[in-house]
Length: 135
Image (tube, rainbow, N blue to C red; front, side):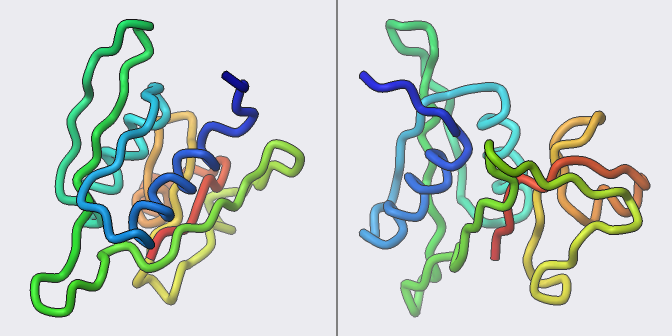
């Protein structure tokens, strides 16, 4: 088993691949950061629901139910983009928080008050590390 150097990139790739393949659910190894990211995605309506399951190695896994439009079968998540990478972290101040698709998408930020969307960070006037864009 190889050690993943960027767990969030792995998480986003698993979601992206499951959506491209048209899967209803996807499993990802759990971590506190991934649990928070999954919670943000559900709150913003990008995924239906998620369940955290225990595994024998005590890491656990997150089972995510992906969201699709009933008529068109289009996924709710069209684009997932990792912004801050291990080799090049992207930090922004509260005044420099990017707008994704003129406010139609979300940027997920890791702040000292936890994970939040760009809109929440602007309201609370906190900056942080820009993890990813979702739309």
